[in-house]
Length: 483
Image (tube, rainbow, N blue to C red; front, side, top):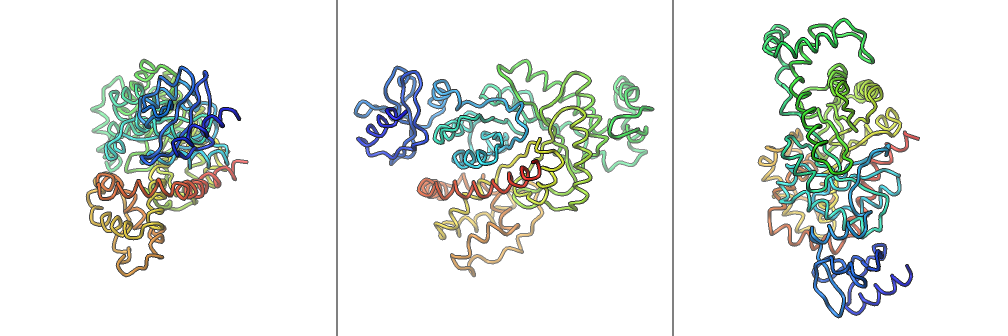
C-alpha cells in the first residue's frame, strides 16, 4: 500500500490536487483515490486495465473521473465494499437518510465508533421528488463517500416508505438492498373513530371468506403475548388492517420475484393517525408468518409523537410500557422493531436500547440536513438569515408533506438577533422543525444551492464533526443500554 499511496500522491501533486488519504486503494492492478479539485471532488484513476472502466478526462496520463452514477457502478465493480449489501445478522442498524449526498463520510466515522451497521443510502419517493434525485444518485453518493473514508464494513440502501409494486421494482433495479413497505394507503385509518355499531356494519361488507378466516384463527384462543381477543376487538382490527395484510403479502412476493440478491424487508404500519395496539401488531405479524413471511423489521406507530426534527413528545412511562409489549411480539416472531422518525428523539433511546438489548433499527433522515444548515449559521450569517426567512415564509407549502405542530409565533424575530445568536435557532423546536421540512423548497432555489454547496465543500470537516457529534448522541443512548 505504501507504493500505491506514493504513486497517487505523486500523480496528484503534478495536478495540484488534494488527496483524501483514506481513500487510496488498489484492485486488479488499478490504483484509485478521491481527490479535491477546483471543480469539486473527483476520483483519480491510474495504472492498470480497470482504469478504462471509468469515464473521465485524461491529464498527463492520469484520469480524473467525475462523481457520476456510471463511475459509481464501475467503482462498486472494482471495489465491492463500496456496493450496498443486506444487513441481515447485524443487531443494531441505523438508517441515515442523506438528502444532500454529502454526509456519508461523517456517518461512517460515527458508526465506526459505536459498531452500528449503517443504511447510508436511505430515501423515500417523496424525498427523491423534493431533492430531484434518483435512487441511483443516492447510492452513488454513498459509494463515493464510503470509498473516500476507506470504509469496508458494509452498508445498506433502503427504498424507504415505498407504497406500490412499481416503486419497489424501481428501487430494486436501482440497487436498493432494503425495502420499507408503507401500507398506509391500505389501512382504514378512519375506522378508529367509528362506533362499535358502525364497525359491525363495515365488517359485514368484508368478503365472507376473509371474515371466516380471521374468526377461525383468533377467536376463542389464548394467543401469545396478547391473550384473548373479543369479537368486537377482532372486527375493528380486521376492518383497519385486512387490506394492508393482503398488500404486504403481495408486495413481499413481488420482492422475491424481482430481487437478484438478499433484500431486507421492513413493514411499516406507523403512518397512521392512531397508535398501533399490541393486538393489531400481533394479528398483522401472525398473518404474515402464516404464509412464511418474517420481516427483518416492523415499524408500529408507538405512543407519543414522533414529529420531524424535534424531541419526542409524550409520556415516557406510557412509551416504555407500550414499547415492551411490542418488543415481546417482535421476539415471538423473530424480527426487530424499527423506530421511524428517530431523529433527535434522545429521551426514548435509553428505553429502546434497554428493551431491545440493542437489536433494533432506528431511522433518521433530516437531522443531517439540519447539521448542514448549522454550518451555514456558523460560517455565513448573511446566507443563514435569508434561509431562515425563506423557510418561515414557505412553511405552509412544506406542511402539505409533513405533519408538524410547532408554533412559528414562538420563533423570535431574526432581525433582532446578532450573528453570534444564529446557531441557537437550530436548537429551538419551532425554528428547527421549520428548517427541517422546507429542505426541498430551499434546494430548488439557485440563490441558495450555489453558495450552500460551496460552503459545505469548504468546511466539510466542520460538517463531518457536527454529524459525528449529533448522530453519536443517537447511537450512544441506544448502545449504552444494550451492553
